[in-house]
Image 1: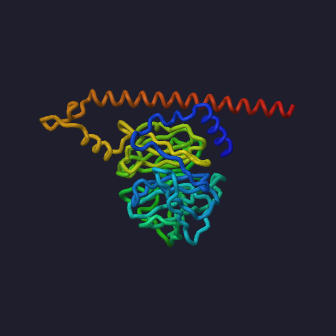
Image 2 (image 1 turned 120 degrees about the horizontal axis):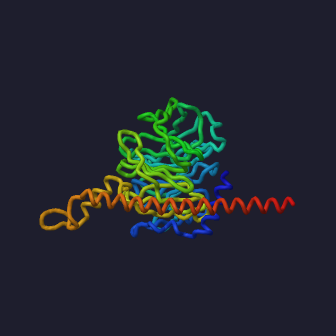
Image 3 (image 1 turned 90 degrees about the horizontal axis):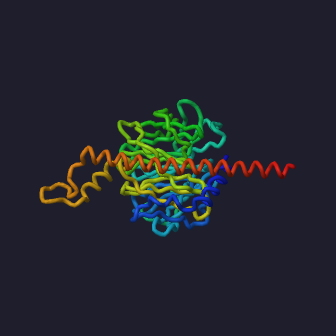
Length: 347
């Protein structure tokens, strides 16, 4: 299945080029991972301790390594070796509010063969240099049985860990205990269905939004009372094999990563209801004011303004739906050509 997705992704890149960068923010246009060791970047997380730096890693059995990548140059500024572990299928990374990085060894390409998986935690280093660090290992099981997953998101306020299971027909969001236990088994329980073939997920810096991406699409959720509430589809750029996702530190932009050599991390600026609450407040405070203390464009948002916003959002969703439809048709065409070629070879 992975080879098929990669082939379709490559075909999409050939057909559509770099169309997915159209929504990039001016101040953060993404970057390209330059490290030749990073060929299967499967997770992405913005550092809290080092602005402009992003944590990533390879998947499968690359080894116990996590890389700190400079978002301005795409170059690796530190390689962190996780001490005392032998990862099986690392698929995700997230940064918590406690100054720690969480690494999800949660992949299961057999669709639920492994009875338990693991989360590793290490402290973000004060200085970014190559080093080996001690880790805390947490054993994870699901309340309703084993399953495949590639998405780990730690809430930036509560520190609670969440996992989104991966299935082509849609997965589910699972919540861990309020605090992970080093000594016992941490049981993750189902919270809500997620209608995405999920390859990564991330909370916004203020914790009010949860973004979940897949290979060809994604969904943004408002986060209230420990549960997701769907806001709409994400504009996911066309990539070779879209695997990773994170918010920029200001919460205004989503960064989308892909596997492959010199993987391009694409930036897509958020707007409307998909903007986290903190970013919306910041945006409102930056508007020019008139003499009465109201925003120069009319001050308080009116019902007409909100209707316009919804119309704009709907237009964006329509464009996204069109792109998905075109992608689906292109994918079918690739498959048909492959089948015909195989038939000719057999003949």
